[in-house]
Length: 323
Image 1: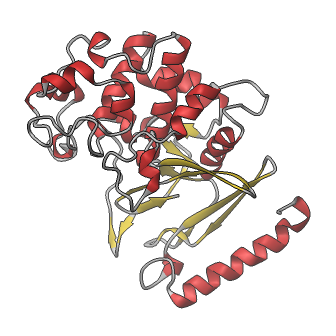
Image 2: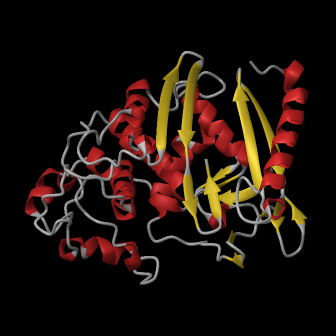
């Protein structure tokens, strides 16, 4: 059990662990000392942050605990929480078909169109494959992707993948953002910021342009090559957020505190939190190699052990890896 009294000892342990990893090339690549990484320890309502390595290899800039990172798909957990909260507050069933709220919503499969609900969008079981090239390389705006949904092939093409297989999907999270905007009468960004983020941390930002101009940024690498920083996303509700380590740690602490903020107020109702961590894809095709795919806000999972309760959230993008 960690306490303030022995946190210094734990820091020594971490330093030795990192030194060993560098010596044995345990974590990544041929030279881990050139890799920047951060560690946050949360226990007994206390958060301790640590930083190692470099945030910029070329200029030999040291990683700090307040260096800003893109959250990539960790954004999905915030989107899922926001939509569940909104549905709860408006007394709308999770089983309500999406097409009754988004009037122009239409998949190429009539069966999926008629039956897809919020849980289907959030748990990647709509039967729609990724089609990511539309917005990553094709750079189509979401309005065009939305209007063209009915032309996108399902997998299998007959739509039989609906609720029968896990198919990771960013477009469905963009649709979740459309639901939030339509139901709340606010933009997706404003709703999440006003109803979630402001109760959690001021070091969580909805997108790159919201990050303070004097923030300390990192430089991503893919193997030995510098990677591009994706500053704009067509599917913002899937991957647009940025944060410091402290911001993410505060978010995890909120989850561990059953959806309550530091002042005790309820940010995420218990029923919504239960849905966030509930198994939604088992046993209908969830990859058994990763049980976290069972939860809603990919990759969001919660396990119970005799020692206590643990939240786990992770994501990846070129040049980054988040746990």
